[in-house]
Image (tube, rainbow, N blue to C red):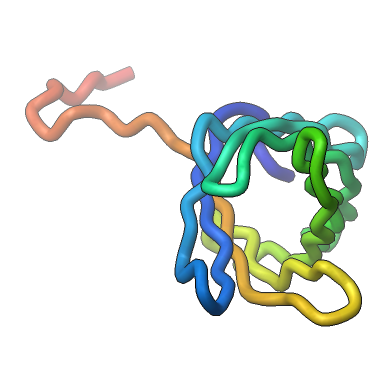
Length: 112
């Protein structure tokens, strides 16, 4: 359902605002998710699962630091949106989308 490769995304928290995830890669295989990237907090890895209905549950582990639970669903247009949580008190929204290469505006149309 989801493409493996480069992704872009953000999370939002009071005091930090909306923060981008960079150098962000996710791999999907047989319902298992793995990935890595970095953000304002530091480098992280992702491990999780996804189901046939588009539900995603991932654990983000900052290297040498804390964990964050991400739970979201597919919006039907390419984005997974939901809520991140650091129990018991902190949570906020997030959204992630695959990076899709698009042809340049002046690239010729190829007829098959």
